[in-house]
Length: 436
Image (cartoon, rainbow, N blue to C red):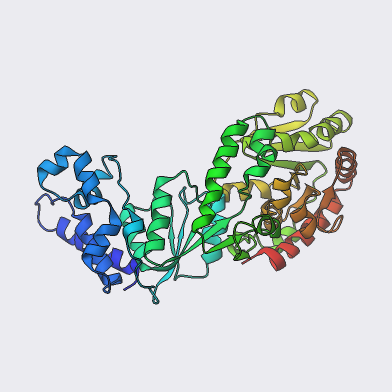
């Protein structure tokens, strides 16, 4: 029985019990259900072995006298009540546990310890599996029982951007190793402490170097447990090649369902006042923005009536100075993914300024993909992944210096038909090369 099907069966039994008469239902014994489910998934494993993998029962009881006094086993108490009460979890001593046989009938499990609307989760977890119903996809809203059962059902488990600072993630990885489940680490960013000073958060002055360095040192150690790494760009693969030998590049792609119709791109009106959008993302991009702030201010001083400017994201509000210069300007907060695409569609140009650093040269080109999906062309900095997807002056523009940014912008706001032509070509190239 599939993991999802078994859960639905359990839920149906619970609902049947709760709806029977007017009797108040007893608390559901989630731990017994979990054990029963694991037995269905792995009948070859002894219950004593399973229990030993779930928690250090003796340490839990020793630590919590009330549990000891109740006569309940520690593992039973924790998986029914303790985790809800925020009690400490006592990890098993995996070094003393013999590995289980390989689950040859197991499937693929994907886990990301964050909300399911996070962009990294969408691109690295959900979107690649959108045509595949066999993979189990788990996230921050998944229950501990769902995650544990999924691991017992797995042949391989993919951890998206895992942090070694998460005790929960570390436990799940160790549980995978004990069950002979192949551990795959999926990354769409660099995880190397030697480049810490080049990280956007430090260069933008919003994070402490020592903290970032220590975090990267801690998290990069997670590769010691990895059987394979999957990453979004060739640069990430190359820079991590000394940490792990088995590396696969899987580029970010956007499902066709998110693309607007080509006819809508063809028929999009050519605005005399060009609508420009800067997708700032998080505040870590403040230093990136500084590379175009000068050209934008010069454009505002010389041609205030020819364009409007919108900022979308968590960058501090930059609108006041542009409004003072008589430019129509808007500040939009960070929004959900589908709402972001809707905002992009309302504009004619998207700006993607990026400093030339090792981190930015390793980043994927998702802003090009997202803008192109809505029939909007991009002007981007000359970093690796944008150079690879933009054919300059055909399906977008690549700029290397502030003067190139200014010259390109000032030319385009007086030639909006060129923007329209490039937008259509960008749409076609994204469909061909970056859709799924």
